[in-house]
Length: 84
Image (cartoon, rainbow, N blue to C red; front, side):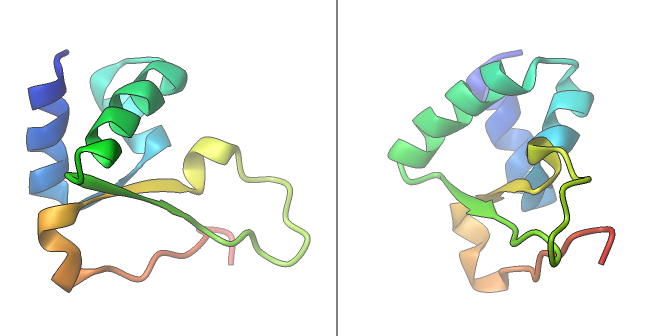
């Protein structure tokens, strides 16, 4: 996988969690996070963290860490915890 594959996927999906990206690309979340940070610095992607549910500690960090394609910012989606 190269950076352009990640960019194309996010542009198509608009928003994806780190866990979803890791599963889709069969790649370690930490490696993806490094690649995504490059895209954040370039202004192509925005990182969003969900608020955890009241006292929730069941959700792995990768499931509440989302990345949104910056070109689609006007169509921003409401993100929420699956357990809420």
